[in-house]
Structure formats: C-alpha cells, structure tokens
Image 1 (spheres, rainbow, N blue to C red):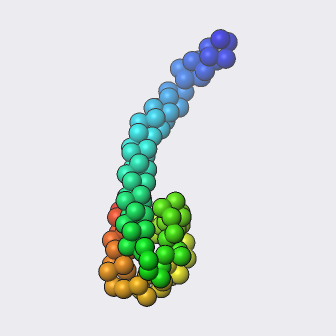
Image 2 (tube, helix red, strand yellow):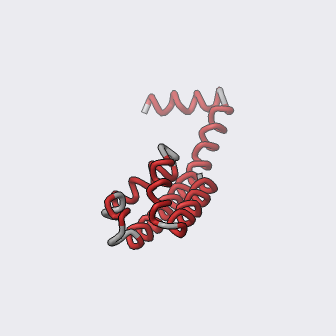
Length: 111
C-alpha cells in the first residue's frame, strides 16, 4: 500500500510520466490489432501455399501449415534470406512467385 502511495506521489510530481504511460497504453491497442491482422494474413497465405504445393516440388518446404507459417514469417515478413524462397518458388511457376510477392506487399504494408 505504501508503494502505491509512492507511485501516486511520483505521478503528481511528474505529470509528464503519467502522460507517457497513458500514451503507451493507448498505442498498445493499435499494435495488438496490427499484429492480429499480420498473423491472419500469414495464416491465410500459409494455407494457400500449402494447398498449392501439395504434390509439387515445393512440398518439402511447405509440408505442413505450421512449417509454412514459420517459413513465411521468417522469409516473407521478416525478410530473412528471401532469395532462397523466391528461387524455389520461381521453379514452381510464375503464379507462385506472384502470390509470394502479393504476400510480401501485404506484410510490408502491415508492419
């Protein structure tokens, strides 16, 4: 209880600190909704890539939905070693590469 009283005194002495904390709390809501939207985009494209690669050469890279989510998150959203994934998708066909570029565009605009 005495610690709470100290915090109240600190906020009264420094109102700028309270403004910063309120701003962080307000921005947290939009960050959470953006993250939910990004994860839903990754999930939808993971299902699409898994279905399109079923029985194709790229099935080794997209063997399950969870592995596809992991691969799309690392190579697509975070753009880590993106060349490796684009090379393998280019071998599968132009449509797969265009679909991946659409995914890149959506995730880049969301992040």
